[in-house]
Image (cartoon, rainbow, N blue to C red; front, side, top):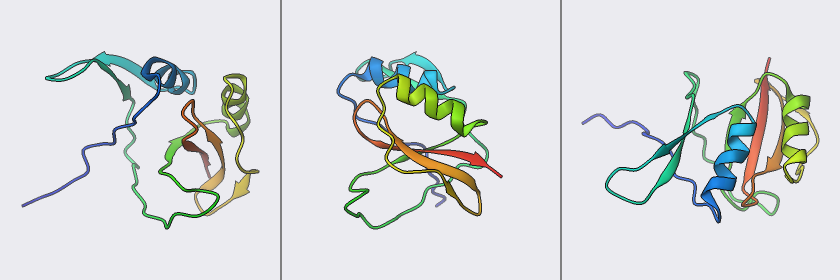
Length: 115
Protein backbone atom coordinates (compact mmCIF):
# COMPACT_ATOMS: atom_id res chain seq x y z
CA UNK A 1 0.00 0.00 0.00
CA UNK A 2 1.31 3.44 -0.95
CA UNK A 3 0.20 6.44 1.06
CA UNK A 4 0.81 10.08 0.23
CA UNK A 5 -0.54 13.38 1.49
CA UNK A 6 -3.47 14.47 -0.61
CA UNK A 7 -3.88 17.90 0.98
CA UNK A 8 -5.15 19.89 3.92
CA UNK A 9 -8.58 21.25 4.79
CA UNK A 10 -8.78 24.70 6.34
CA UNK A 11 -11.89 25.34 8.44
CA UNK A 12 -12.81 29.01 8.14
CA UNK A 13 -15.31 31.27 9.84
CA UNK A 14 -15.96 32.86 6.44
CA UNK A 15 -14.60 30.66 3.66
CA UNK A 16 -14.85 33.43 1.03
CA UNK A 17 -12.85 35.92 3.14
CA UNK A 18 -10.23 33.27 3.88
CA UNK A 19 -10.00 32.26 0.21
CA UNK A 20 -9.65 35.90 -0.85
CA UNK A 21 -6.83 36.39 1.69
CA UNK A 22 -4.83 33.58 0.07
CA UNK A 23 -5.74 34.84 -3.41
CA UNK A 24 -4.31 38.27 -2.51
CA UNK A 25 -1.05 36.53 -1.56
CA UNK A 26 -0.86 34.94 -5.03
CA UNK A 27 -2.76 31.65 -4.94
CA UNK A 28 -5.61 30.92 -7.34
CA UNK A 29 -8.97 30.19 -5.74
CA UNK A 30 -11.36 27.88 -7.50
CA UNK A 31 -15.02 27.54 -6.59
CA UNK A 32 -15.51 23.86 -5.97
CA UNK A 33 -18.12 21.31 -4.97
CA UNK A 34 -18.09 17.54 -5.00
CA UNK A 35 -20.50 15.37 -3.03
CA UNK A 36 -20.55 17.89 -0.20
CA UNK A 37 -20.83 21.58 0.57
CA UNK A 38 -19.59 24.37 -1.69
CA UNK A 39 -15.99 25.39 -0.92
CA UNK A 40 -12.87 26.94 -2.42
CA UNK A 41 -9.78 25.14 -3.59
CA UNK A 42 -6.47 26.93 -3.23
CA UNK A 43 -4.48 26.16 -6.37
CA UNK A 44 -0.88 26.42 -7.56
CA UNK A 45 0.62 23.57 -5.65
CA UNK A 46 4.37 23.43 -5.26
CA UNK A 47 6.81 20.68 -6.19
CA UNK A 48 8.69 21.35 -2.97
CA UNK A 49 5.67 20.80 -0.73
CA UNK A 50 6.55 19.75 2.80
CA UNK A 51 4.63 18.69 5.89
CA UNK A 52 6.39 19.03 9.22
CA UNK A 53 5.29 18.05 12.72
CA UNK A 54 6.23 20.32 15.61
CA UNK A 55 5.17 20.33 19.26
CA UNK A 56 2.52 22.86 20.22
CA UNK A 57 3.88 25.88 22.07
CA UNK A 58 2.54 29.02 23.68
CA UNK A 59 3.43 31.03 20.59
CA UNK A 60 2.12 28.42 18.12
CA UNK A 61 -0.78 26.45 19.61
CA UNK A 62 -2.40 25.55 16.26
CA UNK A 63 -1.54 24.27 12.80
CA UNK A 64 0.09 26.67 10.33
CA UNK A 65 0.33 27.02 6.58
CA UNK A 66 3.61 27.70 4.79
CA UNK A 67 3.56 29.85 1.65
CA UNK A 68 6.60 30.22 -0.57
CA UNK A 69 6.61 33.85 -1.80
CA UNK A 70 8.86 35.78 -4.16
CA UNK A 71 9.02 38.90 -1.98
CA UNK A 72 8.70 38.66 1.77
CA UNK A 73 8.26 42.41 2.20
CA UNK A 74 5.58 42.71 -0.51
CA UNK A 75 3.65 39.71 0.84
CA UNK A 76 3.86 41.07 4.38
CA UNK A 77 2.47 44.42 3.17
CA UNK A 78 -0.45 42.68 1.46
CA UNK A 79 -1.21 40.56 4.52
CA UNK A 80 -1.11 43.56 6.87
CA UNK A 81 -3.35 45.60 4.53
CA UNK A 82 -5.89 42.77 4.76
CA UNK A 83 -5.92 42.95 8.56
CA UNK A 84 -3.36 40.25 9.26
CA UNK A 85 -1.33 40.36 12.46
CA UNK A 86 2.45 39.96 12.22
CA UNK A 87 3.40 37.28 14.75
CA UNK A 88 7.20 37.26 14.37
CA UNK A 89 10.05 39.32 13.04
CA UNK A 90 11.89 38.19 9.92
CA UNK A 91 14.15 35.22 10.60
CA UNK A 92 16.99 33.87 8.48
CA UNK A 93 17.01 30.08 8.11
CA UNK A 94 18.57 27.37 5.97
CA UNK A 95 15.68 27.55 3.51
CA UNK A 96 15.60 31.35 3.32
CA UNK A 97 13.97 34.27 5.08
CA UNK A 98 10.61 33.83 6.82
CA UNK A 99 8.12 35.30 9.23
CA UNK A 100 4.66 34.45 10.54
CA UNK A 101 1.42 36.40 10.07
CA UNK A 102 -2.21 35.40 10.66
CA UNK A 103 -4.95 34.61 8.19
CA UNK A 104 -8.55 35.85 8.75
CA UNK A 105 -9.19 33.01 11.24
CA UNK A 106 -6.01 33.87 13.20
CA UNK A 107 -4.31 30.72 11.88
CA UNK A 108 -0.53 31.22 11.64
CA UNK A 109 0.82 31.54 8.10
CA UNK A 110 4.55 31.29 7.46
CA UNK A 111 5.65 33.48 4.56
CA UNK A 112 8.89 32.00 3.25
CA UNK A 113 11.18 33.63 0.70
CA UNK A 114 13.49 30.84 -0.38
CA UNK A 115 17.23 31.40 -0.59
